[in-house]
Image (cartoon, rainbow, N blue to C red):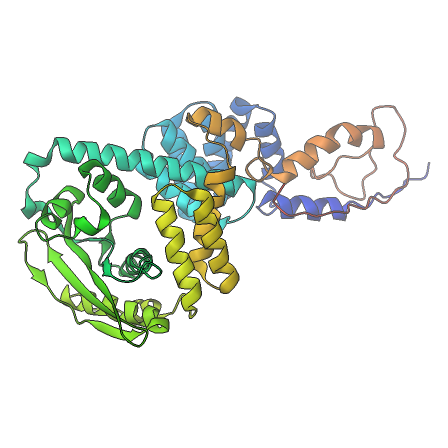
Length: 442
């Protein structure tokens, strides 16, 4: 009887690309298929053995953590996922499951960290959009809880315990700006916060937390920097410093930025050097303010930090103005209007990364559903092809047809060995060609 060879290289290459880990003999793909089928206990037993046999294999520990997550063995799942991320910090699926696990165990700030790390790797697609929406909801929940707890415990908060490395950035006063330029106060504060966050020795209070506390205090952004309110604001935020000031419009299409830095422990106000320039030099002026504020704080920058701060996010004044308008509309929860401005900013300067990130966030807030409970979000997420693994889908789809065709795809059988199918006949001669797009997006 004539034996014929079926070429399966295309299947093996596609499976390896879509699986996210190399086919190294550990059975990653077959174990992933078991998890996709809900065979969590069987997968866990095999993976426990493999985690001992292959202690440096990130995929084994990730799959073990996933199986244990579904078995609701959360302490063990945390160990598995943590080990996977120690071995491979860029394992996006492990990061995502670590985020869901943190939610399941009511560690919201940890969940936020993992979802942010996940989105730094996977920026586009439906899963990224829905994760952004989820992330914003968690941040708002965390900010509300933080504000309520801080206000309830305000009498017990000692200014002496405030961290010297923590700083909040509020909107600069724009009362000396025309209506057309007043949105610049929002953009300036945002870029200053972004640049200060590049300094390893500083921790910047996140915008959503600052805004939520101001809402609880019923203060506007402009009132937040009043010397009588800034110390209290810093105390409630846990920030030893608040950066604010004013922007004034000068004759000849010029601007002046007057920054003030409040030490919320002592109430002392220091005056970093003012910045003056043309309208289209506002980004350079922002850099000057950031560097002088850092100098006032007594922080010595590394070359990498200084270079990062000096990099211009955009050279387009028009793009920056529209970006600033978008921030104003966002603060008013006018998301459609905010989206329009952020998209215009990106159109004016496609390389304006901050505007592009905000545009993606607003798109998620407008179009992605709100899941409420983690179980609803989980139900969607574990069915997403990226989280489930495209190779798992391919192997599940081929499982039925493979027997009828008379071969076993990707299961370790030598390619030169004939395989007798379930119907008692040898496989027919064939070449299988897989065509299509093998991206990780649906």
